[in-house]
Length: 121
Image 1 (cartoon, rainbow, N blue to C red):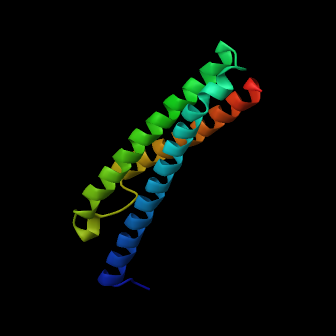
Image 2: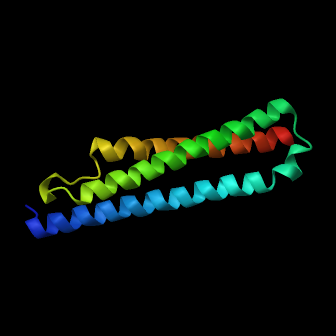
């Protein structure tokens, strides 16, 4: 069963909006993790060794890359909205690559924060 042009356009618009919202949520979570860990650094650094702190610094770096990739994802999504209806897709490389990087570095950053937490206690 073929999807009408209007229905296909609506599905593309919904997919682009969902991708945008997901990227925004991960950006919010990433900046929250950075803010909380930086705010609590004074309290948790006292017990940590320099090698333990490396894990926290790597976590901040991973989260910073996630933020940059998230911004790139949102910019790519904004540019895609302006393309012709038949070519718009959330599966375009210009969207998939930064979105995958955002998610991967967010996950890595969380894992590194957990590793730091385990080692520093």
